[in-house]
View 1 (cartoon, helix red, strand yellow):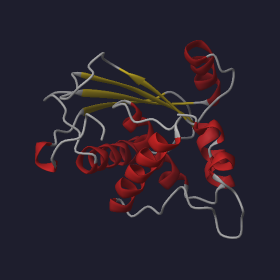
View 2 (cartoon, rainbow, N blue to C red; view 1 turned 45 degrees about the vertical axis):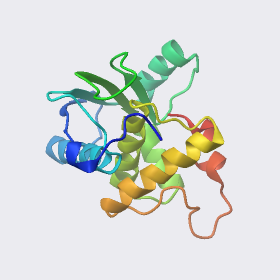
View 3 (tube, helix red, strand yellow; view 1 turned 90 degrees about the vertical axis):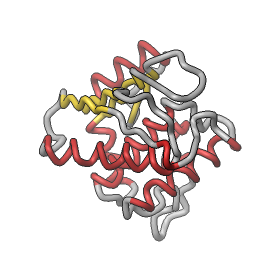
View 4 (cartoon, rainbow, N blue to C red; view 1 turned 180 degrees about the horizontal axis):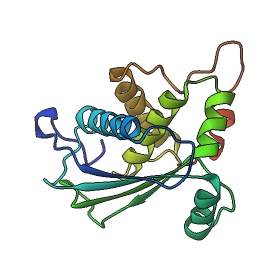
Length: 185
């Protein structure tokens, strides 16, 4: 069990600072609502304990910016769908006041959604949830950790009416590695 989990009655939602740094993402009000819904569902289902006034930064960038950050901080000279940068050094709940930053790459998100035959906003919602969970120690580099994180993502997305993103698209033999190479996050 992840140390950030508590009971659902303890849920506090963070303040979200959304920055759109690249063209093509869509309507800012709709994006703010999408991010708020995704984060609220993650806080509720994962029962994450946050300090009152906790803050989250979400940056909607492009592949170039994410590639630059990925190279600088992870040593990987490629864009990825979402990067998560925890904001504090807390190792147990409650978390905050600075939860961290999520930075998403528009071209990669668009491409992946098309390749997986997913609605763009469903895929974006999944990546916000995925990146947000990373801020609380959830990971997917070991099989048991990946199973726990993916199960939690499925439950969160189901409450938002979004299908299991880890199922193979109809008519394909794709596996997890093909859909999310290196399980980057």
